[in-house]
Structure formats: C-alpha cells, structure tokens
Image (cartoon, rainbow, N blue to C red; front, top):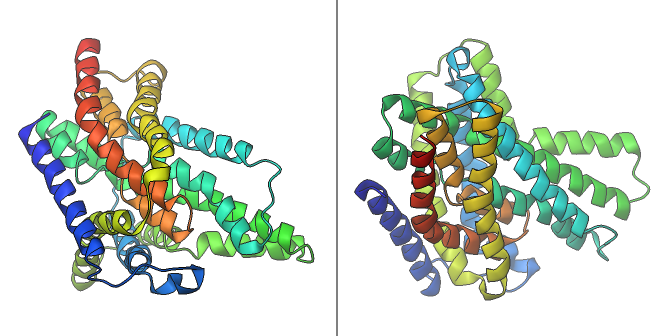
Length: 341
C-alpha cells in the first residue's frame, strides 16, 4: 500500500469522523423521530442535495465529455459484464429471500421492495475516485491510470442506471399489488416515467444526447457543472459520518460484514476470472480491473439507500467496514496479481 493511498484513506476517515462529530453534537439539528418528520432529517436533506443537485451535475458533465470513439470497449466489457452479473446475482438472491412476502401498506411495501437493489449496489459500487485514482496513479503507469479513469467515467453511469431500473420496476410491482385497480398500461407508463425522469438516469441520457450531437460544453456551463461535481465526494463522506451518528448500526453489522465480503473478495474474484480467462487480459489492464473491483464500497451506495429508505444503516456500516478491510485485502490482491504476472 503506497504512502499516497494511506494518506487518502486517512483523509477519508477524517472526513467521516468530522461528519460523525457534527452529528453527535447536533450541529445540523436533530434526526427524524418518525416517518412524518423524515423530510426535515439533516442526513436526508444532505442526501437529497447530493442526489438531486450534485450527482446529476457530475453525471451529465462526465457523459457529455466521454470520448466514445476511442473507448477501449473490450477492457470496459471485461470489467462491467462480471460486475453487472454480480449485481444481478445479489439482487436476485435478495428477491428470492423476499418471495411471498407482502407488506400491509404501500409505504412499507415500497421500502421492503427497495432492499434487494440497495444491497446489490452496496456490494458492487466501489470508491473509485477518492481511493481508486491515487491507487492507480501510484501503482501503474500512465496507460494504467488512463484505463482506470475510463472505468471511472462509466462507473456511476452503468451501475446506477442498472440498479435504478431494477428498483423502479420493483416499486411498480408493489404499487400494482396495493392498487389492483390500476391498469397495466398506466402502471408501465408510470414505471417508465419514474425510471427515465430520475436524478440519475435523466442527466445520463441528456449527456449522451449532448455527446451524440457533437456539442461541446460552453465554458460557463462546464465550470458550473465541474464546481457542483467536486462537492459530491466531501459531501458524501460527511454524510456517512452523520448517518453513523444518527443511525443505530450495531444490529446491521453482520449484514454489513457480508456485503463487505462480497465487495472486497467476491467482486474482484469474479472480475479476475472473467477478465483473465474470459476476455484474455493480462498485465497492466488486468491489474487495473481487479484493483478497481477490489475497492471498498463507495458513498453513492448510501445516497441510493437514503433515496429509497432501504438498508441505510447496513450500507453506512458496510462503507466504513469495507474501507477498513481494504487495508488488508488490497495488498493481498496486489500480491496475487504479481504472482499471476
């Protein structure tokens, strides 16, 4: 583990600690006591600010600036095919555990329906910027860093879009159960609308259209989006700390450990097998993909969990535990990659 990466890890923990201290001191106010006051909960307000303002700005700017013509599509596929497959497997297992269950009311049913998707994104979405970029810069050459940046540019675009479509379909299924009078076409139309007119999907689609039109971002617009995008990382780290202060995570530790194991062990193993023996990658490209997969859970998973009020305590704990665990598992994956050559 390089000194640069250690410094980044310490900075991440410091930001989380600051958020936790602010939460414990109630500098931003008291947490919500019940569902009726949830709208004024400080952690939820910060999460909504990230979800509706800062993350969309980052996604639109990233997508609008992608160089699609020179994208290394084989390398991209070697990472995202097994990653999405693992996400679908975790999601499918969660759906299987929920089989036959029907919550007594619509609100509870929607929260329950969002649980599989929330766990799936926590088990696959990595901290590719705060930890990943310094790690790639310190370990690999310029070509390796370029591969990592390429994956980062598509990371949220692909994973968040997939999981958003899944959760919106599940929510539509619950609404159909609790509102049997709703017609099929009306249900499908509402599902499509909620999936597209969404703080994650809509800026991605708008960015792709902007990109396909061959337009460049005007200077003031580009600077505004860049400024808003830079707020995502610190805001999310502080949000994790505040959530730790406001949420009882003790009961969520066993499940969080399982999610951390999926993220730190299962995901890099799946990517290694698929990329090396499936896509034939070796050397630096293989190492970059496996290390990208081995990164701890990223803070966007918490924003997603808060958006749908699903697994918030578990996701918060998983982010912290997986970041701590990466100190041990990261060097082990590096040693295995060196042995493979």
